[in-house]
Image 1 (cartoon, one colour):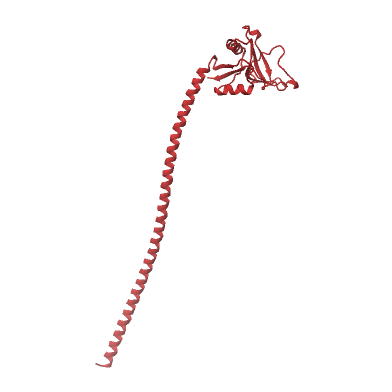
Image 2: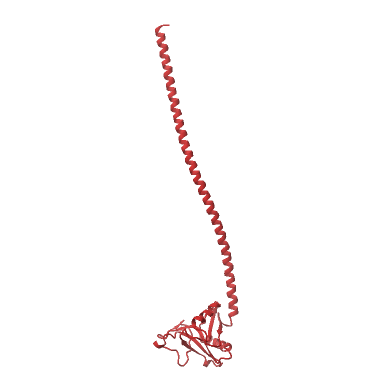
Length: 238
């Protein structure tokens, strides 16, 4: 073998070695790229797992809250049903009380009275007596109503009494002579109403009812709300 051929063969082998090195370098670069991609994918999968865990936790929390809300709604619905039943029962009770207490009906107003055989009731107690029956202390709006109420009181007054005093819901200002409500009917006795600074506490109007059927003897007076009277006239709007 000549020197030229030997050199040619050595160069050929050097080219093959270089090519092998280049191929190896490419393979190495490709392997590193794949490892990098795998590392990035692994990191993404790890983040996705964390997000999935968060989503699962949120889902569980929402499920618990939804279940609690369902229970709350069920309780509210049940309570609403109870409230509706109570409202109906209260309406029926009020209607029954109205029927029971409608002793004297004038227009859309039912009146009833509570009378004791002695001076027993101040205005605060009179108000409480009416409220106990879901009523208010009675007002007198016109002369016709006044006459009917007086007849009713005369008929129901204790036989042992020749006269009684009964609270109304009408108020009077001894200083200004103003009556509240302003549309109230008033029929003062001869020496009434009490007015002026010396009678400034005489702010409540009551009925002076005599056993005589003649309405000329039935009158209205004003006095202090602390005064004890025989009873009260109550009213219920229907």
